[in-house]
Image 1 (cartoon, rainbow, N blue to C red):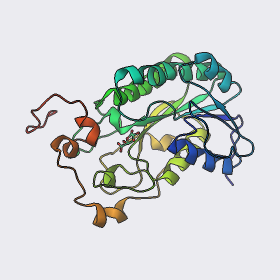
Image 2: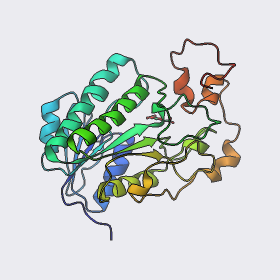
Image 3: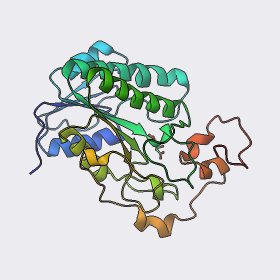
Image 4: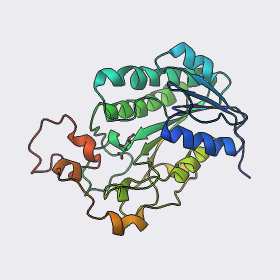
Length: 274
Ligand code: 15L
């Protein structure tokens, strides 16, 4: 029997692909969820949960939604590369509103960070979670900001936070890169369960990937929350090996296609970060 958190859990981004998976899984465990998103919730709201539409740019609305919650699963905001003007309010101001709410409620934040915070590392180099931060766009930069916001609020206000640098969380991997970056929905759901229930996390970073043999990623803080993935992309290797793009940057760097969006550098014949 899984434990039930003492206080309700606020889930932002509830109407998105990952939010819907998390809602189904955690509500199924009997957790009390406060669901929010800027978009309407497309499913039936499960028993014991409530949904309210809100904009992450609205700090007062976020404070109100977080009232009484012990954990904030922050999966809201822009989830792909976009112009800076579109990232600014939901991902930058929004994070500040989430952390201010967590500070007031003495809640833990579990933040959906992304591999795009470090997307300009080469695939050939296996990196640990404390590697150099190398965002591959404004979206990745907002994830770096979120991770650093976590550090600030831990050291200054004792707000605990767990940052999961998600690889590619889809129903199944669809190209060669995802043999390394794939995170199954089930592994993600178990991660959120463990990160919420763990005794003490401080501020930590965990790679969000299933148990993939070709992973780009090494050490992280998963020991603190007692999580290990059980799924793997390995069984797709036969069908996905060779499913690549013709673009050199995409196939050289961990962030894949994001490294190529709006890029003006052309000297990729020599690796950039040696
Ligand atoms: C992400 O962070 C995005 O949210 C998702 O749409 C994918 O692009 C994923 O990264 C990925 O790198 O595959």
